[in-house]
Length: 67
Ligand code: FES
Image 1 (cartoon, rainbow, N blue to C red):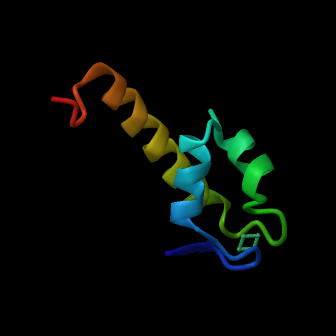
Image 2: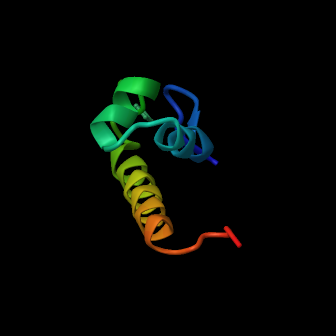
């Protein structure tokens, strides 16, 4: 789903930035430029990034498919 229409950025791209090493929202912004124009996407983008970071944290403490 498109999150940032100005920069054509999808939720998948935001999650991918985190998987590639971005550790917080500012690092995601630096990598993919989400919110760099009108800024209307910022709230939604932050939520997606926070959820992905929390999911990764939970994964570290759990087995997360490693059996
Ligand atoms: S929708 Fe993201 S900067 Fe405009």
